[in-house]
Structure formats: structure tokens, C-alpha cells
Amino acid sequence: MPYLSYEEPGIVVILSLTSFLLLLNVVRYILDRLLYCGIIGQILIGIIWGLPVGGTSWLTEGNQETIQAFGYLGLICLVFEGGISTDLAQLRKSVYISISVATIGLLMPIALSFILIALPFSSSSGTAYPTALAAFSAGASLCSTSLGTTFAILSSAGMQQTRVGVILVGAAMMDDVVGLVMVNIVTTLGSGDMSAWPIARPIVASFGLFLVTLAIVPYLLKPIWIWLVQCTQSEVQTSSLTEKKSNLREILIKPVRRVPHLKFILSILVLIVFVTIAAFIDASVLFAAFIAGGLINYLWNVGDVNSAAAPGDSTAMGMYEDYFKAVMDYILVPFFFASIGFSIPITDMFEGSIVWKGIVYAIIMIIAKGLVSTVIYAEYFFRIWRGPRKSTTQRSTPQEQESSNEKIPHMEALLVGFAMIARGEIGFLIASLSQSSGTLSLRSSDGSSSESSGEAIFLVIVWAVVLCTIFGPVSVGILVRRLKKKGASFS
Image 1 (tube, one colour):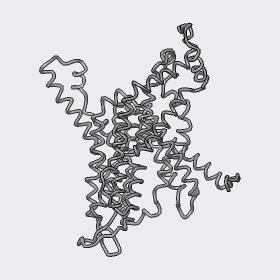
Image 2 (tube, rainbow, N blue to C red):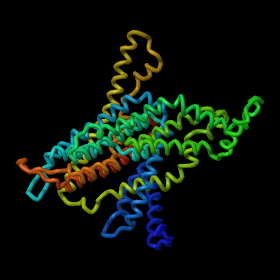
Image 3 (tube, one colour):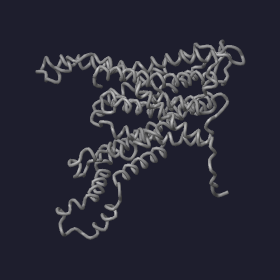
Image 4 (tube, rainbow, N blue to C red):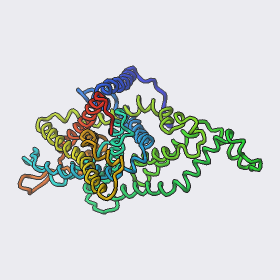
């Protein structure tokens, strides 16, 4: 049959989808009001409505796959919003701190995951222990911060433009790129092919896309954007146009001038082009979406003579709120976090030995990611140490005197540490690939034999991913609520 015949959906399907969509938004609203962690409620709704709880699936597998696809579209647009709303000047100033945060956040989970080697697991041949390869695969699953969760936390807490928010954005973007590398490493280790290029390709392609964009912006993208924007404003600028203007240019400008919502259409085209290029060159699609958002953020007011007259109506963020915000807040982003819930094998996770190992491993992974807060303290003490050295050679400025008197940034460090704890979509992806590729292997206590039945290790990893994804947003929500009660501002 070369077409899909139209059939009226049954009342069960209608009620399931309606209750699912309604509860996603109601639970998010309640938890955001209480602790700024509505995404946790959406993940729990995804678990309940997914496959299967109590032997009954409230959503069919086809519905879940559709919701997952729309959810990933929501994730792309959420990262696109992050690029639009990020203070690019602040990001440039904080890039070294973001790199340090990302580096510690990537290395510590992998290093501490080798503790798993000491945990006993039951196998067909008796008691067995995870191999070093299994421990590395577990660390790879827990080394990347959930980009979607990070942006959702920043958005719900109103931290996008703060220094903490900018540091988190930079670190989470680097985590996402390295997460893709980890996906390739795990797949390569499972297949036995140790060639370097498949492993290095995602990071080379991602940063290559970034560098090429930086190179062509002033010479190609910026002039094209200015010309298109000025075409739409040619009626306003009629008095300044000379009578010698060619008819050919008028013919070219008129169709462009008639296009409604031109800036929105251009923004969508930029996003589509960058995401498509990233997919074809094996770069990070989410990193490409962030680059597209940052590019729109930079170009938005270039060549716009009306931007000074109506600054509130002509910002890139204003465009996002007009065209994206409603469908993102109430449909696409809830679908994304619910799809994380779909990925949790909840019915297999509550065996006693799995539960305690999962909780212990989750605590270790919380500590591992929480160590990124030491970067904030190190940066603070470095500034304090550098201040007196400058003052011995030259008179200190008021800004330097103020920085020398500032308090130790405990709250800023806690916010960065807790916000980086959440894992999510990348963690589930790498864990699933590790299981399917056979890297989650066990060895006997004497080391004489090994087997690739990694179901138990996989469930321990899932426990850690789930608990970290819950703990991070809840902790940030408690801190933000406490700050707002005190009337303090974010750093």
C-alpha cells in the first residue's frame, strides 16, 4: 500500500496521550514552583507511561518512538536557545575555566569507575568481577553531563546570563563533544578495531566546524545577513537611496522584501544547515545547534537600523520567545525528558545486589563530578594571589580592590558542582552501546576466564545515571530557592 490509510485513533490512545501531555506540564509546574526541578517530574512520568510498568504499557512502542524523535528535536532547539541567550563576551572570558571544569568532570568519573573492579557480581561460573574494560565503559557512560538537563536547569533558575551559567554552558558543550568521542571509543573497543581516526573524527569535525564558522563569519555570512536585512528595510531608507540605483537591484530586492518573518526564517535555515552539516561530517549535532544559536545571537542586530528604536522587540531572544517558546515549553522539551524516562529499565533494577551497588556507584559518581567545584575555588585563590603581586608594582584599581575583598565563592562553586552532576541521554546511550558491544565483561576471581554477560553491570550504570540525573537538578533547585529567599543574586 503506497499510502497510509486514515484511521480514527481509539479513545484509549486519545486519553493516554492527553493525560501524558497534561501531566508532563502539571508536574513540571509544581516542581518548578517548589524546587526549580520540574524536569525530574517529567522523567518520572516517562518511566510510568513507558515500557512497561506493572505489565501494562500506557503508550505503544510506536508512540514512544515518535515522542522520542520530537523530544530530540526539542533538545536541539533547547541548545539553540542556549546559543542565542548566552553572553558571548562572558563566554570568551570564562573559556579557560570552562575547559578546566570540563576536563576534571571528564577524567574523574573514568578514574573513580575503576573501583567497580572490586565489586563482586554473580555469574554462571560463580562470583566474578568487572574487567578493566568494563570499568572504563562504565566511566565513559558517566563522564558526560546531560546538555539538555543543564540548559533546562539554567532556564528554570534564570541563570543563562550569569557567570556561573556561562561557565556551565561552555563545560557542558565540551562534555557533549567528548561524549561523542566516548561513543566511538566504546564501539571501537567492542569491535576490536583500534584505528585512531574513527575515535578522533567527532572532536576534529566538531571543532573544525567551529573554526570554519569563525573564519567565514566576517567575510561571507555577515555581508549576506546585512544585505538581506537591509532589503527588508529598503522602504524605510528610500530617502537616502540615489536615483541611479539600478532596476536590477530593485528586482532582486522586491521578492526578499515581501517575505514575511524573514529573520525567523533565516534563523531556522541557519540551524538546519549547521545541524545537517554536523550530521554528515560526524560532528556533534548539539554543538552545531549551539554554534548556530551563537551565530544568530551575533548577527541579529548587524545592519538593522531599527534595532536602536525598538531594542526590546528586535532581539534574537525576543524572536525565540515569539516563535519557539510556547511549543518548546509545553510540548517538545517535556517530550525530551519523558523520553529519558522511557530509556530506564525500571522493572529490572530492583534486585537487592543491583540496588546497593547502583547506589554506591552513584555516590562515587556524584563525588567525581562534584570535584569540578574545586576549579571555582582555584580560580578565586589565583585572583587573590595575583592581586597583591600587581599592587606592589602599580597602584591597584577600584575593581582590583573590590576583587581582593570579595568573599570565598562557596555558593558559586556548589552551583557549578551540582549542575554538572546530571547525566541523562548521553549516559544511557553509551551504557546501551557498551552492553550491546560486549565491553561490559566479567572475569572470574582467579582471572582465568571472562564472560560478556554484562546485564548486571549495565543495570548498576543505569542506577548511577538515574540517581545523578535526579540529584543534580534537585540540589541546584534547593540552592537557587535558598539564594532567592535571601535576596542574593547569582554570580
